[in-house]
Figure 1 (cartoon, rainbow, N blue to C red):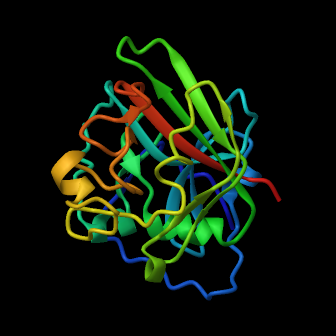
Figure 2: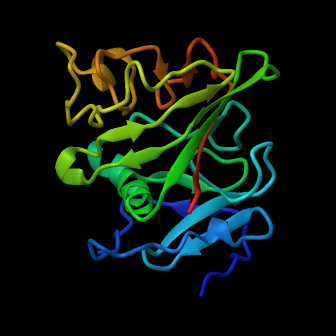
Length: 224
């Protein structure tokens, strides 16, 4: 049973035990049936997620990453592989968090998903977005390789040039094509790097084509 939780914020810890999910299992996405924004649980993963219903793109969006200059508790995104795999931060409306590579993989292999990236620049006013017709994150055996579809929006395409088709890199797991480790030596945060690029939402401060330093949010939406 999928039910909205009474609290608006639930802590995600990097030590959380990830549930084993059968390879062909289809996960229930609570954001498809939610009527209000809030924290819900994916029972099959024992995973709390934040569903956003109030966007210019319609409802039913599941937030996988969020950072804000005004978050009540600043979260470090300079994390190791295990933490990026499991997720960290606090799932909630205004908090900073990373849902986790494994939950994102389990979701995107279970259905046809699209992606929206939202950013605000240094004055926290100018808003822009990047929308991708498809997102899929591969399994850990392929280092959570990213695949995205066609771009539309106002923020510029920050994924197809650099991150698309790339494996995930952290400071303790170097899977990029740079001579050094992009996560450790250039950006101080895990991401899908090729040669380090200029759109890295998990850096010391989020970057997306010179925007996003005050706010970033990544959301996925199941189309079918």
